[in-house]
Structures are given as C-alpha cells and as structure tokens.
Amino acid sequence: MCVSSFFSSRWRMLLLQLGVLVIIILQLAVWGVEGAHAAWGEGSSHAVRGVRSAHTTREIRSHPTRKVSSSHITRGVKSAHVVVRQAHFDIKPIFYPYYEMTPRTTFLYTTRPGALIRDSLYVKNNGTARGTVTLYSADAFTGQSSGEAFFMRTDLQRNVGTWITLSKHRVTLNPGQSTTIPFTLRIPHHVRPGQHAGGLVAEEPIQKQSSTQGLYRATVRLHTREVLGILINLPGKITEKLNATGIIYNKTSTYQSVLVGLSNTGTQLLRPSGRLRIMDQGGRLLQNVPMKLDTILPWTVIRYPVYMHRHALHPGTYYATLTLAYGHKHTMHYATSFDVPFPPLPINIPAAKVISDLVTPDTNFFALLTPWHYAVGITILFFLLSGLFLWSQKAYASTTSWRKKLGGKQAKKDGKQVPVLHHNGNGIHDLQPIKVSGKAKKEKKEALVESQAHPNNTRQHPPK
Image 1 (cartoon, rainbow, N blue to C red):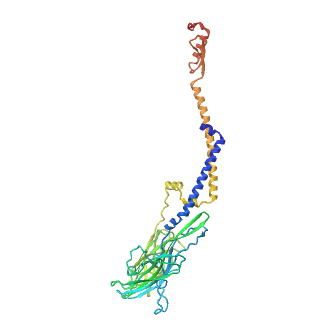
Image 2 (cartoon, rainbow, N blue to C red):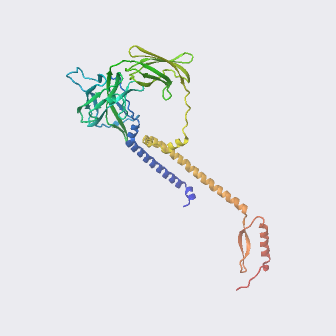
Image 3 (cartoon, rainbow, N blue to C red):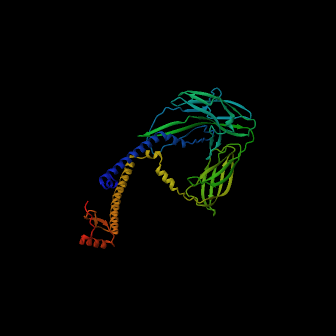
C-alpha cells in the first residue's frame, strides 16, 4: 500500500493517531513507575546531601550537653512513618556518691599546667536495639552566630581535644545496658592561662527513617552527635578583651543584614550585649538593633550577622556605631562606615540548559505527578495529534492539487497528440499518434491530407 493512499484514508489515519497515543500513554506510565522506584530507593541519597552537622551548644557550665542531629525533611508529604528499632545513646559524667553531693552535669576542672586528671564517662543505650557508638574528644570553637561549637572527628584537634585520652573509642551495648569509659586529661606544661573549652562527643551511626504514601516512600538519614562540655580553668593573669574587626554588608544572605566582626583576644569566655546603630550620610538614624550574643571563646574570631529591622537599606554609604558591654563592667565602642552595593543583574539561564532540563528531567519528576497531571497531559497531547492529523490531510490535498495543475501546464507547453499517417511496409497506411509542436501542427495536417488525396504516389512493394 503506497503512502499517499494510506494517508488519504481518514479512518486509517485515525487508527495511526490512536496507536501513537496509546504508545505515549504506556511510555508515560513506565516513566511514572521508574520515578516511583527512584523515589523509593534513592530518596536517602538526596537526604545525605542535605545533612549538615550543627554543633551548637550553650554556655558549657549552664548547658553541658546537647543532642545535635542533622536531617533532611521531606515537605508536603502526609505519610505513615515506619517504626524501626534503633539504638540511642546518652552520655554524662560518672557520679561518685561518696565524695560528691550532687551528680555533675559537666566536666569542670580547676587545675594547673602539667597536671594529670583521671575521670570516667558514663554511657547508656536508651534505645530499643543493639548498637555501637563512637567516642572521641574535640576542641571547641565559636560558631558563626556565637555559642560553642565542636569540631568533627576527622578535623585536626589542637587544644583540649589533644589533652584527653579515652580508654575506648567504640562501645557496643544492648538496649538498657550501660558502661563506664575511663579517660585521662593531661595538661601541657606550656599553655596560656585562663579558660580552655572542649568536649567529649558520642557519635551515633547514621540511622534511616522512612515514611510511605501509597507507592511512594521517602527515606531520611539522621546523624546524631551528643556533646558533653569540658571547661578547664588554669591559673595566671586574667584578661577580658573584646575587639571589633569591622562591619560589612552581607552579600550572600537572603535577608538584608550586616556582618559584625568580633575578636576575643582575652583569656576568658565572654557574652557581650549591646546595640548597633546605622545612620545615613545626613546623620538620620535608620536602624537601632539590639544585640545579645552567646559565648565567644578566647582567641576566636567571628562575623556575627545582624539583620535589618522594618526598613531596608538602599544602595549607598552608611555609618555604623557599635556599643557592647561584656565581662566585668567592660564596654566596647566602635564606629565605621560601610557600603550597600546595587543588587546584581539577573543572570539569564542559557537556552541549552533549559532545553536539556526539559528533555531529560529528573527521575523524581514523574514520581511527583498525580493522575490528574497525566490526564491533563494526555488531553493536551490528543488535541495536538488531532491538529497534526488535520494539518497533514490539508497538506496532502494541497500537494495533490498542485501536482495536477503542474501537469496541465506542462501538457499545454509541450503540445497535443495528433494522428500522423505512417507507412507500415505492407501497403497499409495507419495512423499513429505522435506529439507535435505548435509550429509544425499545420504542416503535419497538410501532409496528411495530401497523402490521402494522392494514394498512388506512395511507394508500393510487391508481395512476397
């Protein structure tokens, strides 16, 4: 069957259209199932990218422990959580009833350089499954928004983290089981006076939590670290000193803010509070923001974010004055200027990237589609195919008409077929149609008439 006759039949074209539509629907269904399987099996890998350990702890003496966990939460999904038996560990200082009146909440030592201290850590599995916990010592540092934070196990330790030696670094316990881990704290002989902060960390294995909704399943990975603070007081000259290192505009923040640089160059922990005032070039007060910071450790530098209230700062130059009270009746005054730049121009996404994203979408894209999305997409596709079908019929009719007109013009140009007398060699004259041009038409007719009027003039051949 030729292509033209096939497309000329409306019923056959309609069947072809329905076949293509069925194939597309089946392909969409396959993609949806693959997306569901991808969400089932690969949700945890996306959660791992969102994991970031936040190691914030309050003042060591008042808030000795804090459970720090990191997770990636799936939004907008109402699901049923799967209950899984998991291990969960708690740590605290060992309690000696015979010479301690109350249980300790932190490790607090007042000692001297070169001293050797022996102590123990109490570890208990309060979970519902057998598990293993990793123990290690870590240095403390000041977080971006003030307050103590602790380095990871793989980070380089330089202070208290190197002074502590644990008898065990990995402990495996059954549910409800507990144990005591002895450790030693050796103070170096050459060390600055004042306060030194660190911590003992119990790092639990990465645990998975799952939630399901129909065919879809989301997996969340939890990374939990429990930190028990250690504060060491060493004798010597006590210094309380807080310096401001500058005020700059925060270009990376979603909300308008400035970064206030603060440095604790003393030997004690500081918790400053005060105000930041921002004025325009005319001296008009635009911002009067109160500040109350958490702990800033000795010999640490931070850039504390201060967010603007009520009114935004337009591009230009501004003056800032900072007043902070800290320690035992100490006050810091600081004044400077900073510039608010113009917002960057929006960057156009290259068309190639947009096309690639549309052609090769994420595997989880089809997993998020509902049956209504598929119904709307199939309806739109059906109308597109119907329009394509009508257009193809119209194009075929136009092509056929154009070919007929072209054939008629060519026939007029070449001439008509007229009968011409020919001799067949047997004395019989026959008429055979040949194509003649417009100029020779009259001459051919005259020759035909003359041959019919004088038949004796033709050459006769004797019969064989």
